[in-house]
Amino acid sequence: MAVNFEYYRIFYYVAKYRSMTQAAAALMSSQPNVTRVINNLENELGCRLIIRNNRGITLTAEGEQLYKHAAIAFEQLQRGEAELSQNAGLQSGILYIGASETALHGLLLPILRQFHEAYPAVRLKIFNYTTPQAINALKSGQIDFAVVTSPTKVSGSLQEIKLKTIHEILIASSSFTSLANKKLHLKELTQYPLISLAQNTRTYELYNKFYLDHGLEWEPDIEVATSDLILPMVKNSLGLGFIPAEFAQEALSKGEIIEIQLVEKTLDRTICLIQDTHHGLSIAARAMRDLLVEKVK
Image (cartoon, rainbow, N blue to C red):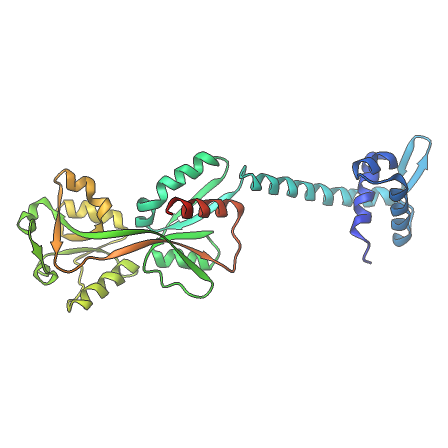
């Protein structure tokens, strides 16, 4: 049986107010129209739903039974509408972001603070991933979008939006003063230990290619899980490391590390936002994405 859904909506209001007149007012309809719909619904269901009397309307046993289910359905719909209204005003919601270490510190943190100050009721769930891990999480629907560093190697439904270019430099601890104030070839530095992210990262792949392009092998002596570990290890004279220039400024100004000038042009990388175009973003995710894109224009 496929009863017109509008019939049930009108019945819900009639049963709720126990009055045709009040139901018509709530529905912004006319009393004759409400009466006609109730008659049609009773005919389609094959039973009486209401009894009119001097005090208004009484539900029959069948009417009470139907109202019990109709009330649950319509109250759930009203609650859903209210939640959507809250989400639209960013008065609630959850935002899931996957971010690489470099993207988090190089761009995302201050924008997260700005977003949180503007929409404190939206909960933030930030997952610290390597670029490949973030992309896999996006593909499986675990996050709304990813903010990571290039190369991303995305394809298919995944879209890359470039947000910020970062320049990488080679650094060493202040104990390597003999390497300062002169330009050196990569080949001249092969005798020194190297610190790098692990093999399952895009950074490792990037520098492996960089060295191969210059006829050298990329053989790090120390591999770390996250990029924020490279600087403290360099400070403690465990080896040389490539990091974004802006991450090294404070340590350089304090004399804790030195920048090694290379003849070869060091790498520029890009912080990117990756989204899956086959899956729509939540209202909160769209607001955050738009803030990121607008911030870097």
